[in-house]
Amino acid sequence: MAIFKQLFDDQGTSTLTYILADADTRDAIIIDPVLEQNERDLKVLESLDVTLRYIVETHVHADHITGAPGLKAATHAQFVAGRGTGLSCSDRMLDEGDSLIFGNEVLHAIATPGHTNGCMSYRWRDRLFTGDALLIEACGRTDFQEGDPGMLYDSIQKLLGYPDEYLVYPGHDYAERRVSSIGQERLRNPYLTGNNRQAFIDKMQNLDLPKPRRIDIAVPANQRCGKAA
Ligand SMILES: N[C@@H](CCC(=O)N[C@@H](CS)C(=O)NCC(=O)O)C(=O)O
Ligand SMILES: [Fe+2]
Image 1 (cartoon, rainbow, N blue to C red):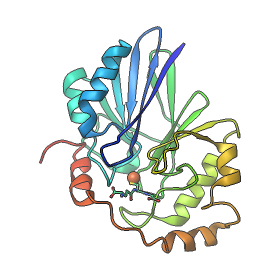
Image 2: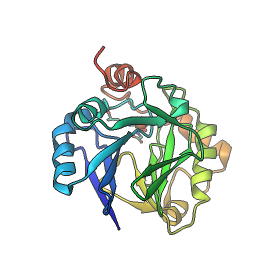
Image 3: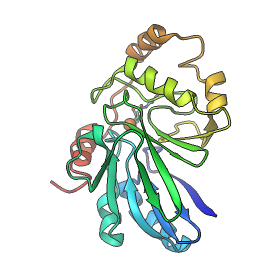
Image 4: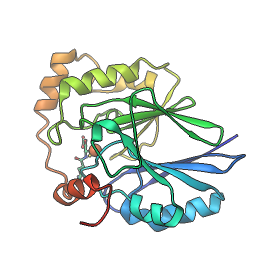
């Protein structure tokens, strides 16, 4: 038996945060918590009656500061990120193929660089937590933080190699969607359909998006695992 909870930050970042737990042992992990939602997350953990073991980041976020320090202080959970983030402040760095055990449950690390160098997706059972590598009918931008559209294309192809039935839980959604599947993204994702690698690169290089509002504060803070300077 397992516990699964999806939470949404409605305070401006549209971040999706996930809590996964083993229903027998009550060991839990949280993926991509947001600083301003510390109180909410602690309440949810308490109401689920679970013990937080790991705080897992999909990448060094540009749009929000991680909620890790507050959760760590309250629960003594460990901070975990992909090795490509270079976060020496983390308690544990995962490489491609590594797994994180919580109770009888396993989270598998899948390196999906491109939005940032250190982007890691995770698989738990038949669910993929894709961070900003693969969003619902979109994907993470590649115009800051070592973004590389060719690398992102290859990472997305890697994710699309999972079975069609596997569910896609992204790091954000800006249009009130909450879940997709590998099959649905292959059929409907407008960044991918009809685009070969070069066409995808051209599209990503011409998105012309405004810079995230909090990038100058968020990136340095997240490079310290959310700790104050
Ligand atoms: N309006 C948001 C923009 C956030 C943003 O740029 N998000 C990144 C993920 S960190 C992205 O890849 N967005 C894809 C998109 O907007 O299509 C802000 O200011 O924070
Ligand atoms: Fe991001």
